[in-house]
Image (cartoon, rainbow, N blue to C red; front, side, top):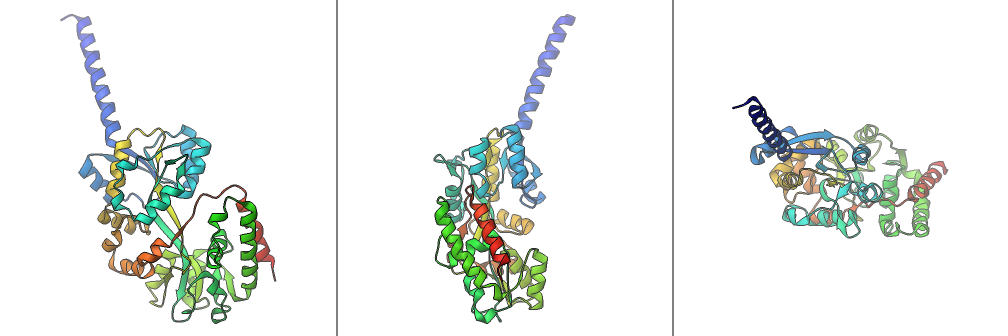
Length: 358
């Protein structure tokens, strides 16, 4: 064999090996852009054992996810987890995602109301860009022995809890009070004048309610301490905060308001240039299994949209969740849709006037 022939053969072998190696890496690695706690090591290892696919986890938040995917035109990652109200705007402006093939999703594993809400809130030009994963809510955190009359946000303005109420001067308070007053602020999103009318009524209610407010909370720890001390017996706050307090005081817990808790959902979305799409769908269907979803709940602190996963949660947390969220309360959650331009300015002025009012 001549030197030239040997050189050609070695080059061919190297080329084949290189191509095979590159293909193997691409086929066996899922690049996941997610939040802290959403892909715990134990779940990643179980997924690898079942599928042979490695998961490369990059922790991020909404702003960073959009920035990373925008910089690459939707490249660099195979699966992302933006909040549902941050999907269509980013897609419309930056074209960073590709539609979800719903035929590849095991829809039976999802809580139906959450799946449908997320599909609706992530639809653009007739195409769905997200399905639900982790969710949480804000609603009422009550000392039920002292604030039994509070069933909805507007009950925070009742005489029975005067001077012992707390909530934030933020948009969730505006939205929650609007629903409790019989209005649908989300239905008014497309009409600024109508939305202003809704906010004007909420503003008047919140100004009238000021005498009931012990403090407008800004930090979670401060609110929890007010509830622990008994200075506050009823608040508008988040579910996991109420459950945290319930560990030490059985009278305090999270209650879903009559008009509906306000919910956020972090989704699964496919970056436009994903290179491991099949692996992405396998991961989605894997982590939505109830037992696996319960492991993620233990890690992230919030529940998932996996149907029946609460049955596998730690007993005390399962009881708190089920007490706060019977099925009708889950189906009544008001999920945040994308916020149209201009509404935050309306809300900001309303909140300023409420704060300044005597």
